Length: 198
Image (cartoon, rainbow, N blue to C red):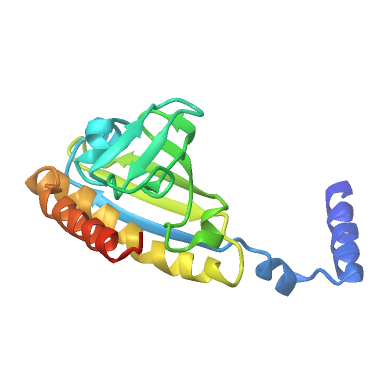
């Protein structure tokens, strides 16, 4: 009786304040949610996400990884760039629950400098399916509204599908070979250096 009375009072208070169901739905946080099944045991997938060699086998050609709360999770998509422009520079682990969950802060790519000044939040969860395969889910949240935020959201909607696809491929056919990637980066940097006025 007392519990139902509280519910009536709370519902009345929400109605009086104008906060109905429609407003509650609007307040839901925008997020990106991705999933992939990887043909590897959960411990192997955990190592892929939490070691330098693991990250470099599917995510980026260079990384600094210190798997502890507050530890480095620096993912360098462009190792040839200057400090602060390499990719996910200066990111850090926020939480780790081996081998089931890791979370880290994240930023926009250098091409979106306004949004890059902020941080978002990523949670990766691993679930053992049969001892030989692992479900990987990724939840990315903390988005702002408008301006570069919408472009950043669209960018990562594609980027996380690419990263998780690389993770899947890493366990099907082997680690990613970054040779061509690095050659194209080198050409791009050389072209930029020759076109920049001195």
